[in-house]
Image (cartoon, rainbow, N blue to C red; front, side, top):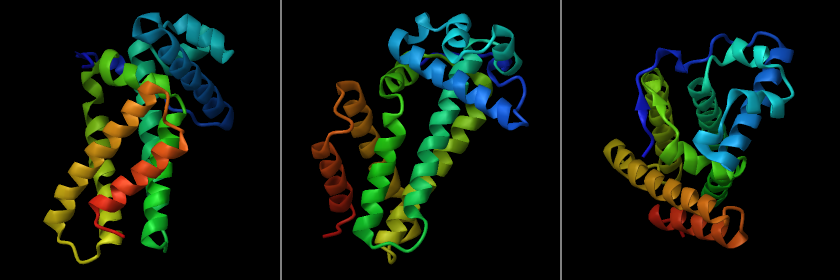
Length: 206
């Protein structure tokens, strides 16, 4: 289980305003995620991240004051990837089966970006106390996406039923995907099909 740390400096130091700044942050977070997956929390250093990202240590510190801020940045990027994929799947008019398939594909794609990193984020890397609102906001939006999927597939279901089912289904799907990421089987066709059948079966969609 990840450790919680009371540290108000776990947030980004400043927000990017220009395209170049966005590109710098993207390179830093990509490097941090890669190193985190390869070396774990103990092997992550700001110097190593700066070297891999191709930026100066001063440029890194402009945005991320320490390792904890880097970790939170990687987590936030993952949250954004997951929510973006799920929202794309539930938007627009789609047949139920196609919507479920897009939902599963979105979850797989979001976790395939840095699969080895997720175990470290879940189990080893600490969490700053200042990040609690961000995590709570993600959890709320995440469950809302599942409720929207359930409403689209079963439009006559009640609000309480959708909430209950969203919690069960989100836990089941996330657990299966995180386990597959650990085992290196995340992008196998068999897993994809099994996950589609799991969601369709739970929602009683033939």
